[in-house]
Every structure is written in C-alpha cells, then in structure tokens.
Image (cartoon, rainbow, N blue to C red; front, side, top):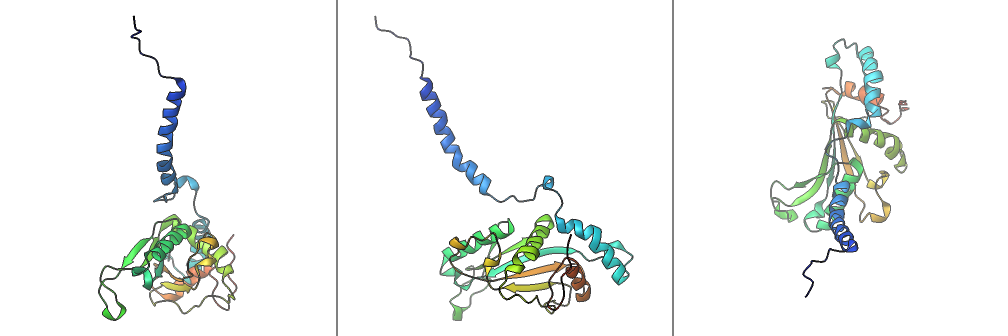
Length: 231
C-alpha cells in the first residue's frame, strides 16, 4: 500500500522561509531607522546651551538690565532656516537635494514652500514649489545653535564676524550664509549645487538691545567683538 503519511517540512525550508520573511522586513526596519525622530528623546539629556542659559545667561541679563521679574527675561523662541530655490519648479531634483541637506543639518524634516500667487514675468504659477524651510524649537533649536556657533561659523571663508545690524526692531535676528558646505553634516561628494540660506532667530526680547545681549551671552560672534566663551 502507498504511504499516506504527510512528510514533515525540512528544517532548512523553515529557516529559508524565516530568512525570506526577515528579508521583507529589513527594508521597513531600515526606513524606520532612517526616519527623523519627531522629538528629541528626554533620555539624551538637556542641551548644553539650555543649561548655559539657565545657569549663566539669565542671571547676567537680570543684573545687566535690572530685571527683577524672571518672566520678563528674554529667551529663544524658535530658529527658522529658509532656502529659496527659484529653479525648483523646473528642476525637482534640486529641491529634493535641498530638502535632504536641511534634514541632515537640522535632524528635522523640512517643509516645501510653494508660491502663493502666479507671476507671469517669472513663469511662476500658484502652487509651484519655490523652496524649503525648517522651524526648530526646544532641544533641537539649542542643539542646532550650538553646532552652528562652535562648528559651522568657523568654517566660513574669510570670516570677520556677523553683522550687529540685522535685527528687525522687535528683537529678532536674521543672517544669511552663502554656502551650505559650512555645515559638517553635509557630504561634499553628494552636493549637486551650492546654495545659501537665511537663518532667523526669534526671541521674546521685544527690543534689539536686549536681544543682542541675549545672543552675545550665547557666544554669538558679532563683528568687532570677542565672542563669549560658553563652558
């Protein structure tokens, strides 16, 4: 009589199926690992500039300006990085490169900015991409400023200090850089085109002299001044 018993699957086949299943999950795990974390983890600790602000900057500003109410002391609200790219509508690949570089520099996914209205002389229609921007708050803001002041600014070619006239009258400061190569996170071999960006520091100071004193305490290298050393 013919044997009616079913044969048990081989151990090798079971392993092969497990390996195949693992192969299908590997790209997903890799994509999840590459995704930017929406919030810095609290276990990573307090940023160095935030600790410096609480322990050094606040007492110095209170003494310098005679501020007795701690709620009136100025603080950093947010940092905005903006890259305008006029050729983004004609060259989407260039915009993708800008978005990837901003994500590497800030650790946060940028937002693509689009035209609000059509301009016929520039061949621009409403809704076309014209650049990208990132808004940093909290721990990411302090970490970015720390890297920008200590690592990126010294890499600027022929650097002679940043202007002290770039305030808007309400305590906000804006500066521009010509090349994204000053950031150590940007890989030179993967750069397709050099571009600049605007960096805006928004504070709660309300006036320029108070905001300038705040940035000075963080070690901001104003032109003609020796920057304060942050321990």
